[in-house]
Image (cartoon, rainbow, N blue to C red; front, side):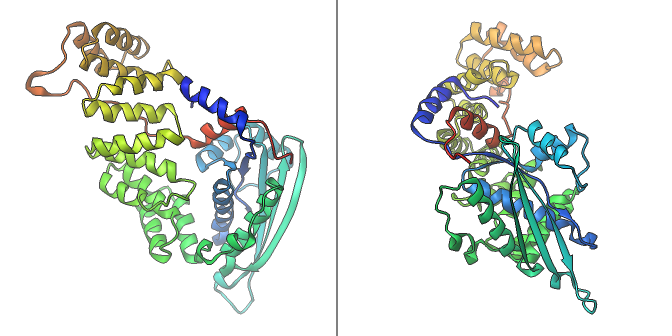
Length: 399
């Protein structure tokens, strides 16, 4: 992910004025030391809560896809017990500043068969990869039914370590609105762990019913419906994400993608324009240009150029710019841009057809059919953006 040049200039000026307290944190799913395999989901739950709370207070946290990529690069098996050397190598592979990992155990009375009645003990640990030394070890214990409360307490302790100069309100972390029902959390995590989309939908929908204020499953339902091109449902579920949620910018970006897919180009342009103010990313400018191009707005050319400023070799952006230039009768530059796409992607028949039309000065098709559809960026890598932003900022936390 790259930023356009204008955004880098603005970001660079901003960073000289604002001290940074941001670190990149890799949270590993906690290891199950209990005798109950059916509690494997608990380790994922702890890590997801920690990622959510750390991200909400400005730390850069690696999402599930990034962690899975790191595991794959090092041929690591999820759920295994790792040595400290392996954890350090994983963190360095992903360019993390800190690693958070841990274990949990559970005990159940001999006369009780209900795992929800078990007692759990969770221990979290940190490794500071910048200084290559261990951070604090924190242990929480209680009933499994109070898992959400234990997770919030762990998150508070973690942030005290990562942000020692900040005034973190313990009461705010433990507020009733922050706590999630155990059954809802389990349903959500089981949905994340499932590889079957139908099962995922059922788990996430169940989690929403069990705890209406729990927004994580709503976000995942939005992702599911967007992947299925059910744009109406995607808009509905992404719309459930509140502005205070750390995933709100990504939810808004994906709402823009859904609105575009539904043919509501005015709403799509409005959403992408809003997102671009906080996240001036190439992907956002590309999609903004696509919506504007559908609306017949010449400014689309400028936004496609913004996208290309940060990634001049991206064939999606080159294709879209060539399309917009052709629609605006800028034939010579359209030919230049489209020729690059065809040279780099000889198998791209659509780009070749568009290039031939540009050479023929053909700005429309019989019957008023569009020359070609714009190509949207569908991924929103806020973590990469924030990592780049943090690189441009001076370190100010001293931890």
